[in-house]
Image 1: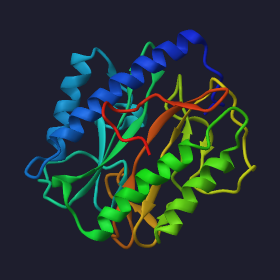
Image 2: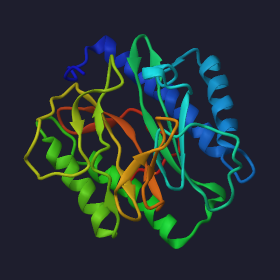
Image 3: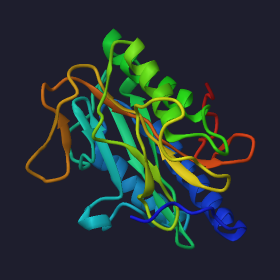
Image 4: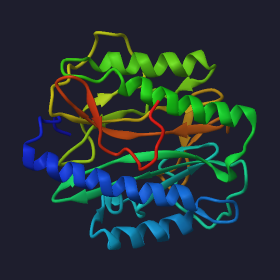
Length: 257
């Protein structure tokens, strides 16, 4: 896992295209997530959209991962396989995907409430995860530290009474899905690696409503909360600029907090 490098103008052009196409795919999947469908329905549509946009999945085949999407429902934290289990109103879901354009990788996840209504705790968890992501994003600029981002995320999460799952982190991205540095969801301002303009990173708060202990189930991929409390992930690919940031995977119509 090499250090994420400052991207060339040509690489950034491909990154922007990769991220934009991913944003369109995730937007469509978010809109089709209604009670009565399965996460396998989302997977099939994602495969069709990769063909439509002439991109390849960054996930399928990555270390042997068998699907285009990770679709983590309720107590599933990350890396959950799409399946035929029917989603119902009030379920919470993270749809995580990535695509490759000219060798450049994008990665993003969207937090979804199935049917738009859920319990107060689940609603607060989803809202907090989204707010924490944006709090982290707002720290990004040339010469900021990883700790600035992590501290901002952690502050929002813990103020809401939730927990950061510390073993799971964001990362650099570009020619590979996971490049250094790790973008932790906790930390102290001014600590950790300094970012440079032209680097591309993924910020992805991964949080739980209960205790932050996790375990991997028998498929060797799906991570769940050990106490089966609700969990959520929300993620964007970000370009570091001289004066701030550019959210490369911003979805059409997405609220910017």
